[in-house]
Length: 195
Image (cartoon, rainbow, N blue to C red; front, side):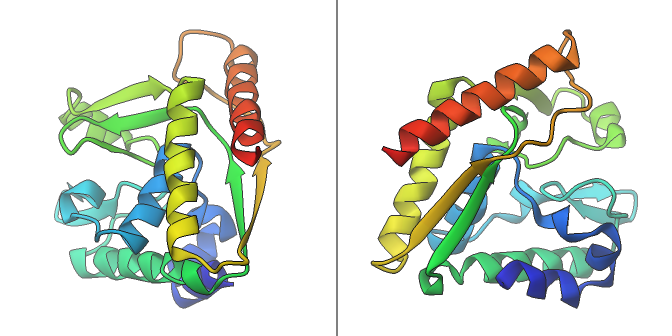
C-alpha cells in the first residue's frame, strides 16, 4: 500500500499516525490526484512559512514546522505514492467533509484548516467554504475521470463516507447540524458518482 510506505519513511508521520495522509474534502482528493497524474503542484499551493520554518498546508497541523527541504521531501513522497494509481487494481476513497478551507491567493482548496498563526498573519488569504452538492460532486467527478484516464482498465474504486462525526465546526451553528449536512451531501455525492 503506497500510503503505508510514506508513513513508515517519515518518523514524524509515524508519530502522528496513519491518518496524517487522510484527505477529507473532495477538492483535496482531486488536488492530490491532479498533482500526481496531470501536473506537478506549485510550491505556493502547498508551502507556507512559519518563522524560519515551513509547513505543508495540506497536512494536518499536528506536524511541527520543519526546514523547507524536509517539507518538500514529504510532499514529493506523497506525490510519488499517488503516482502509483496507474498500477493499482483497487483504490479506496473515503469522503469526510464538506466544510473546507480555500486559499484565495493561490485559488487552491486546502486539505486541513489553516493554522491559527496563518489566520492571524494573513486573515484575508483564507476563507471557509461549505461545499454544495454540485461543488462536492464536481471535484469528485474530476478525480474519478483522472483515475479512469490514467488507471488500469480493471481498476475498481471503493467509495465510502466516513462515519467519524465532526467534533467542532467553524460555522455559526451546532456541530450536530453541520455534521448532518456534511455527511448527507457526501453520501448523496457518493451515490450519484456510483451510477
